[in-house]
Image (cartoon, rainbow, N blue to C red):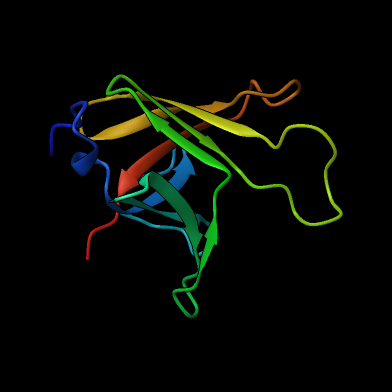
Length: 116
């Protein structure tokens, strides 16, 4: 597995967001795929459609090497207040964590690199 250092290049590319206990060799059809880019404007991310590869931008992405924080963008006319934030700890080649929002503490997730 790749080392996920503070180098933002180690984060770039496609990732699958799965339930923490889901077998990594059996990707579910119902999952969220994310993509991260490191470009001139900094680190950014998006939810990536598996149907047509379109990208829905994320509100914010921060990566310290030890922690990845991904804030979803609120849908137009949808949520009020802050959109949910996914907080993931670097677990050596993948990330593990969950949502930073009341009532969702029990939902454990992992983020694994897509194998293309």
